[in-house]
Image 1 (tube, rainbow, N blue to C red):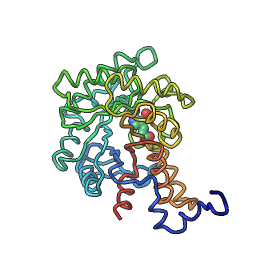
Image 2 (spheres, protein in one colour; image 1 turned 120 degrees about the vertical axis):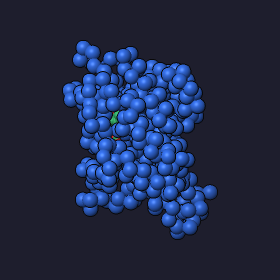
Image 3 (tube, rainbow, N blue to C red; image 1 turned 135 degrees about the vertical axis):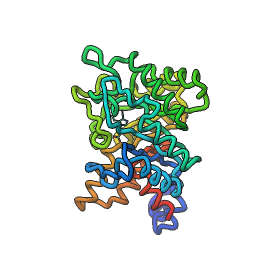
Image 4 (cartoon, rainbow, N blue to C red; image 1 turned 60 degrees about the vertical axis):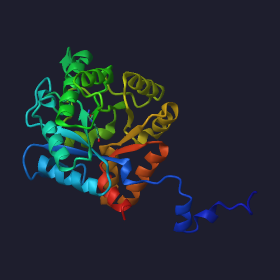
Length: 324
Ligand code: PBG
């Protein structure tokens, strides 16, 4: 059949018909919500570059997580902002560190919520890099040991899933080994497998107070121009034992999400990062676009590209809309 008998617009005539043939549907189960936790009580510090997002003290993070869970969001991922930073990021693997205490409090308050943790040193080092520094660069192998300690300490605190975001070579194997050795063989690893050195992380670095004090992250995060290399990174993390693989950022890398999902068929996460969130909020504030539409279209496109799970600051807001 051809035009004029064939008319694609027939199925677009009203919302009911459109709903009937919609191929991609968002649900709150698609989301994992990032939470920034810091010391104190009753703290909800607004993050300037991420309107609607806050640095929470543990008690406030519990309230936020309870809301998210109540709206059908299955998971949160924690980022810690310690009071003290040092050269080796000690706060990252301290048994009474901010994330370790937050995990315990969240699991206590909302036992069935999946509490994931970001495993990295950049929020805890005084130089702001994701590992320890030797000869002016991040030392890969010396960092692995610290990341493994961090992951084990998160698991010991009750974390349900650990997510290394540092981009050191060999970190997934190092984490798997350490977790298995300490009796945490049942804890899955979500690897930030294809993580690009992106300008879209700017607002996060305000939120987590973690910008590098010298240089940048291009000696460990990936070159945005490389897709074949992204597939190799994902393949290596799978070989090392990753249970879920992630592509980050999401919107500028939809092609990578699609290829990763098709090539490996693994549970695939995508991180709709801080800059992607900030762009939408900025357009909305300036009156240059409809924030709600921009948000839902962004999330739908990430899912359509092949993501099974979306880490997103929109999680609670979108779940509220999707729940009606
Ligand atoms: C830590 C980490 C970063 C993000 C997640 N984990 C920052 C970075 O790599 O500089 C960015 C998340 C976002 O922008 O929302 N390594």
